[in-house]
Amino acid sequence: MDGMQKNFNVTGSCNPAKHYMVDVAGKFEQVKTLVDQGAYFAINRPRQYGKTTMLNLLAQHMWALKDEYVLVRLSFEGVGDAIFRDEREFCPRFVQMVARVTNRVYPQESRLALELGKGVGDMEALSKFITAWVERVERPVVVFIDEVDKSSNNQLFLSFLGMLRTKYLDQDAGVDATFHSVVLSGVYDVKSLKLKIRDGGETKINSPWNIAADFNVDMSFGPAEIETMLAAYAEAMDVAMDRAALAERIHYYTSGYPFLVSKICKNIDEEAVGQNPDYDPRHWRLSDIDWSFRWLTRENYTTTNFDDLVKNLENNPRLYNLAYDILFGTKKESIPFSLLEPTTNLGVLYGLLTERNGRVGIHNLVYEQLVTNYIRAKCAVAGKYPSADLHRDYYDNDRLDLAAVLAKFQDFMREHYSDRDAAFLEREGRLVFLSFLKPIINGKGFMWKEPVVGDERRMDVVVTYGRQQKEVVELKVWRGSSYHQAGLQQLSDYLDFQNLKTGYLLCFDFNRNKAYKTEILTFRDKRIVAVWV
Image (cartoon, rainbow, N blue to C red):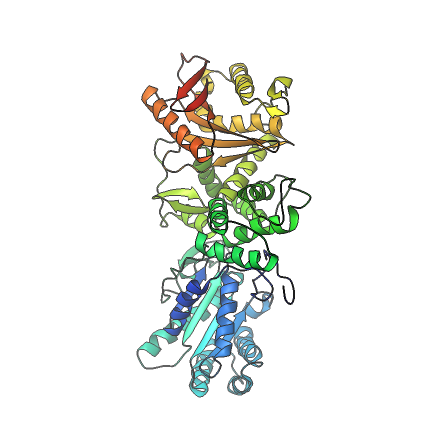
């Protein structure tokens, strides 16, 4: 490969000259069209979701057309809080920032800004400066403000946005001149910021940006887009791969979350040698993607992205409870999805939640595994569940005997839980099982919870052990024989997906006269080991 070798980037913005990147030409054109149309809008997406990378691409495009546009690219990150102390501090500093960021590409316009900005000391004077400057520039002026969250809880900044809103409306009425387009970038939706007004902590909803156009560009990566990044890597590194199949598998685990897409690939490129004994650097396989998912979600590893995810759950009890209900709840009805519901909306802003067939779901399988690990570990530290003893019966010639594990779990439940615990177990029984299973497979195995859409009363758990063994356990609340038959069909279908002929069914029965029993069933071409607890 000519020049510097590229890599998969998971920190900061991506640069096509340095990094393997998804081809985002389609997304770029959609955002560029909004700018060309003179829209004011906000790119509010979760952390590490490609916002700054998109702004960089737009900036490169506009700088190349400097005779047609003037771009003012700003960020209040790192400028400190003093700038927001009062108008006398903010307004002249804003003029100075405009002059500074335009000096390299537009030196004449930069000098003009300093000239016209002399004496600006309040919001009214700043408004007049903007009018005079854009009229003298005689080209559309586009403003980008990145990391807007850093200042969005400040009354002065919101007053500034309110001033831009007024100027935008007055320009449409033909009585003022202002910026052609303004693009704000951050996690939160600036159209509905919560703003602290008084020292007493009273809050209100302020909408300084209700002129904003809807930003409906899908910033996640679809399989076809992921394939473009794999193609670039395969060509550069002379690696054989079924790009379409690998892209589909990456999307299966990540749901196209940009950071996770790059991280799955980065793990294989940089860490598989020495960590994955089955890895062939000359040929990427589906098993490499599976390994990377397990490697990424191992419990002795974290990233700033994952730390933020846990922090958001720790700081928002309602969000934690909602995530718990999605992952472990046994409600008869799924949780409907609505962005009007504040907790759901917050989860979407953080990248944790998404809509799945009209219901609330965890955004991707990586996050499902991480949050499951986090909740299980949190319960373990609190000593919430009795611990399981290890037995030689669990292992047979370096294989995990899952039937023996389920038999021991049946004994465990009979010993530690009684009928009076039914309400507790209906909510937490499946978490009890994961806590029981974890030390048994620890070190040589891995387990993850599959997303289940449309039936939150069941859970599919995939267990791998050693280099080759894979098993599937369906956890289900017993609700009668007809429901049981439907469960067998669901398990059979999922075993087909995993290319397995044997499966396990763990039934939680909360009837008072329940029987602790085990049955070996044949369903279609599958052998099912069913255990009741």
